[in-house]
Picture 1 (cartoon, helix red, strand yellow):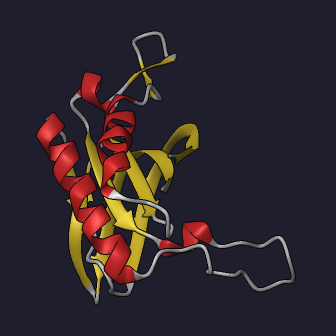
Picture 2: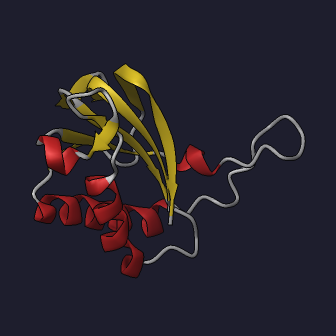
Length: 145
C-alpha cells in the first residue's frame, strides 16, 4: 500500500463531471495498492493516516494529527502511485493491483478510518476523476505499508 498524503486547506474530487467529495482542512490522500496487499494491513494504514503528525500546533510545528484537530480526509484511489519510471520514458503499471483486488481494500480502508472517528470523503472507484486541492504548507509525505 502506498499513499501520497498532502496536507490541505481544502480538497475536492469530481467524477464524470460531478463533485463527489469535498473536505475543508485536512489530508488529501492518493491511495494505491499492489498485488501483495491484503486486508491484514489495512487497519495499520488507517491508524497511521489518522494519527500522522503533520498538522500544525499553536506554535506552527507539525505536531498534531487529523485525529487531534478533528479535520477530514479525502481518499482517492490512484493506481498510478505505483508507476515505475526507472526504465524508459513511459511508466510501467505492473506493480499496481488490478481493480478487483484494490477496490475491496480501498473500501476497507475507508471503513477503518470511519471506525476510528474520521470524517472521510472519497472519489468513485473505476471512474475518470479530477482532484483539486489547496496546499497547506510544505507537507507532502508518502506512506508505505
